[in-house]
Image (cartoon, rainbow, N blue to C red):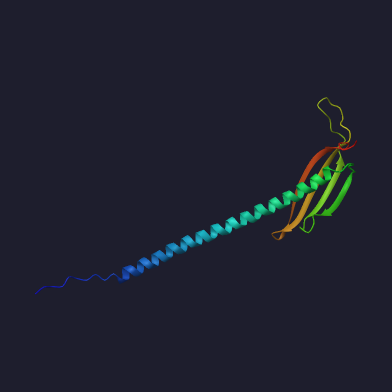
Length: 137
């Protein structure tokens, strides 16, 4: 009499393979979702930084192109962006050149941007100097 060959029961092994494959896929998918979320946050932050930089650059260009600088503080809004701008123009009275001579009609121009983002107030400051009679004929 011939004995039949023993059969191997692979059902349990196949189920274990499927569970492990699903676990590996779940871990990979979670890592991918976390990476995408972080990339989206970084992209939003970069876009916000660029927006504020452009607003400050525009406000600084506008102030620098004034024909006459007047000492003082000016508050304004940057369109409908929700950014408040505070422009300060102060004379620099103790500025000297390399030979020790006082420089006349020099002004410090400082622009501060304030806006509400990420549940808190943010601010950024840009400043430069300008000769007061630069655009005089």
